[in-house]
Length: 88
Image (cartoon, rainbow, N blue to C red; front, side, top):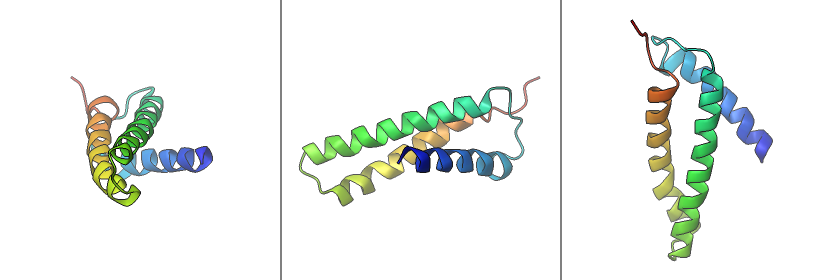
């Protein structure tokens, strides 16, 4: 559901800010960039699973293949666009 996804995204932002990227500065608008990246991840996940289902994969296999790809992609985008670090 959309509410569950939104709650998960907020939780993820807070935990990433405090734990994974705690040594980096967070600039203005970081939450909205993070939310956009999470939305992109949801679309990417749905499209990837849908494509694999169309190719004949089971839902379990499709999700097991797509989930790690989306997770790595979102981590990299978050590091690059949200939790950028200090700028001189």
